Image (cartoon, rainbow, N blue to C red; front, side):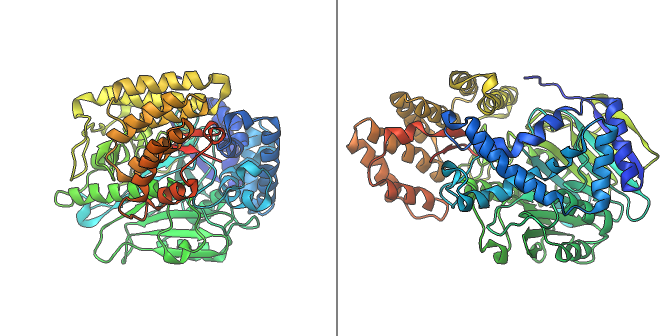
Length: 591
């Protein structure tokens, strides 16, 4: 695993969409290192879906069936692309020496999200047919955005900070680009992406003052004859001068998948930010509460209208979304008196404290995510972009300041020597508890997340190693972050998968004892009860089952009470061996 990134490339494109596509491809040929994206996209959705299967079941048959489903979806969605956007993509691919057939892979994220709602209905794979708030596919992307303005902003200007959390580690994080587009007609706009990915709209800005960042949502209402997220975002950022115009564009089109886009504009007379939420056929808008001069977006629907039919894509997903949201709100509240600065925003993107416990976590329900592959603070009002040049998790920086300025076609390469804004390494703890890891251990903690990342990459790619190699990396992380129960829990899941139930039980006992979050404690208690049941220790199993069932009712913890009740005091060894680790949200995938 190489910890180095390639320098930032800043591109300038001008002309028709087709001309800008051709320029993009030509620049990619000049600067290189764009090829990995074309290996990544065709298999991304398939691999995300397969990750919920037991390791032994991720075979050729499962891969083939899942690939058929994904290809069917992306091919259907490609047929409805706006012609000018299609021409742009094909021109970029052609000038980069790639087949135009790759165009369909732009819809891979829409396809993954739609798969969550479809697999259960279609019964393509029985193992993947458990789509409900309690049983579902693993590895759901997670993003966090924060926007501040007015009194919340230290200098009064509007800033939009965004972690793009996406399963493109080692590809998206290592090859950053900023692209400025000057079309023949319409607004000048720009976007942040990686080499090879001409994807306007995912994280973008325009000269009228608008910024936009898309976040995953999951909903039952999905479709295939509308706009994909890249084209949806592209239309908004290239046409809308205001938040209202962006909403009107959304209402004129059907959107294939389920999204929550944060929009900001410092020129608005009313609220200067909003969250635009969609499913296939419905659009709603959430504005900040009256008097608020900030907004936060994670991955749960905030509109009551859109919550009808919402899917939680994994048992831990809702807690994960809400914890990140609440933690961001807590940090902003602590900064209200002095105002939130650019460095404060960068620190928020790198925050590793679990809100429900107030403790530092290597990974879990935290704003910093192992799949943070782009971290950026942008301000059209200040005409500045601060983009991280670090590897995932990119919130850790270092950041480089880039002027928001359009120019003649071409490109330039920027390195760390151009950095103006240094990344603060100060950690802000939860107001009600202090983190167990003090500031002096930052370097070691950063090393801990790198071991965790390597474990995740091995888990995702069997060519890199097996279960023992994954365990080895997690054990190295635990040696650094000895008080982190999330690392112990993940090791326990791997031992369950391997049939080493005594070893798993020992680690789960440690995790349960260390954990101060009631949600995560009950997660460990559930798996500990199940393991004790299989070990033939019914009294101990009942003890931990009863701890869950007798605990004070909390909405987020209801999932554990339901699972404990459904187990009826026992579990099977076969089921324990069918678990697999979910590295993104720190959970155990189960059938």
